[in-house]
Length: 258
Image (cartoon, rainbow, N blue to C red):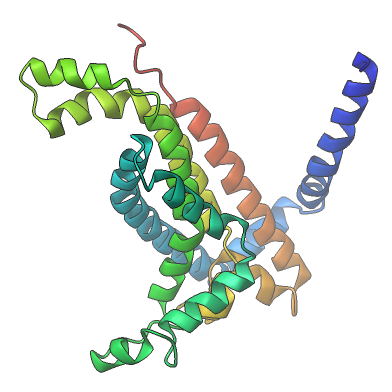
């Protein structure tokens, strides 16, 4: 395959990927962006997005990190569990939303049990967090598994022989080695949660101040104010770019300075 043909194919694909985003940003003036940010509905949606995605990321890290570590060490059920984690990644968001309703809705599997203790999840802020965990956690766990596989078990064994307990050995050996990959996986999961739309719309609704995140605010603005929808979209682009640049800036080599 010729070098020129490879370059041309790459340029076409990059154009397909970048031109729409470039056109979106170029078509939005700073004044339009400022006006959209000044609107109470936009600020409310931004605050809710930050609140829910932070909660979703905390849950993902708390529950996903031990799972990723366990799966990275192999075992009988590691392959099956990894395949199960990939399922939410490939399923359409609408399917995930219907699945959440069928599980946690009033007529769902767990609906009556939740209602008996006074809990109603659909169309609540908690539903937003659950939907975001559903789409973001698999990306973190799958990325973290790859990061933890870089950890040599012999290093942990040496730490244990030097007197470190299991928790200390993990924190001082495994965590620093896997840290760059964990940061990238967490950033990817957070970005996916921030952009979640379909499952959130079906399971949590589009209620201003309660369940309306930034993607849902774009959906609502499309019906009444295209300038606002475009400006909020640019805001999400800016956040995504800042996140990508931040991850590349903050990534560190655990052996640096050694």
